[in-house]
Image 1 (cartoon, protein in one colour):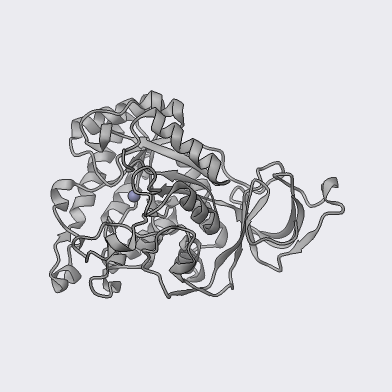
Image 2 (image 1 turned 135 degrees about the vertical axis):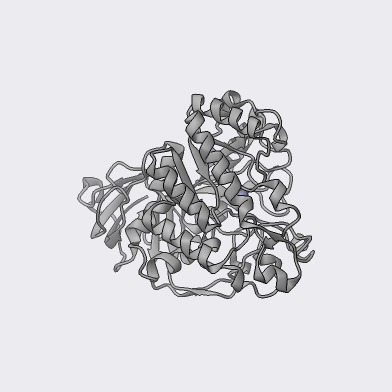
Length: 426
Ligand SMILES: [Zn+2]
């Protein structure tokens, strides 16, 4: 494809300011609008819509192998492309768990067969995610694993966790840390607070997260391992991450769209589409997360896209699995909370979805500079769209945002120089 995009508000996260301008797409690369190949190219007048490098999501669950009724790699990749993402990091809690190199290789191969979104698998921290024996990191890295996590389950034994972090410090790979003390979590299903008491449901205390955040930051100090804390939910954890970063420790963190947009007060009764782990916490926690994203303490946004079938979510709040889908509403929700609210500039928001995650993985910063791969998302800040889960490319519909109206949407997505959603002339 060869096309010239004009009158775009360009959000290049490697630049210091947004600017109105033009750019070209020539055979899978971004080029300056003056590039000779573009002389007779079709032109798409974007009339002030935003153009940014397509986003990177550090935290998704595609359910293949093992739970394909909820999501396959093909449907997950389609959802990611529609949501404006160029790359996703897939969590290893499949069945079987991604603790062997052949499973990582198979996932990479399947991803290449199914679409243009890059799938970067995260390998298990421990064999079978059982928290006892370290997974074979070198072999998993050779097969394509970009990071390590027992996502959904914290390594409870501190000796095992510290051994994992020592090893991964040597190999210079990050731990993606699901921080939640299993002893404190018990059988809780939502935040241990006023709403849990009103609904008569067992709670997950904030300390369950805070305790592991503190434990693992202390291990960073001893091991030098890069630690990325997944889906922060508690205000005090944000403060711990802020202190750690101030001390120069290699600690990063992510927040999800749902933890930024919602709190426990938003639960419309015991609706399983509001059941996720960690749970929606208090309004004060949510405000602390937003402040952390705004000041850069939380350098990444990530969806924790966790598809589940309608049948499994229909089991009621106690029995339904944790998790909500997020890839196809991520841009709309985070734009509303962070940009439309006036808290952040569009450019700074783009950084949390691009440079932030790329840095965690040690990858080059996505940019719109000539020569960069043509992975771009066009965001219309005035698209005005209502979330209809029936329209999702994902195989699952478990979202708390059904029926909510949002302003900004990814209206066109180009990956490898090909429009995979929307798009103008090509
Ligand atoms: Zn997760």
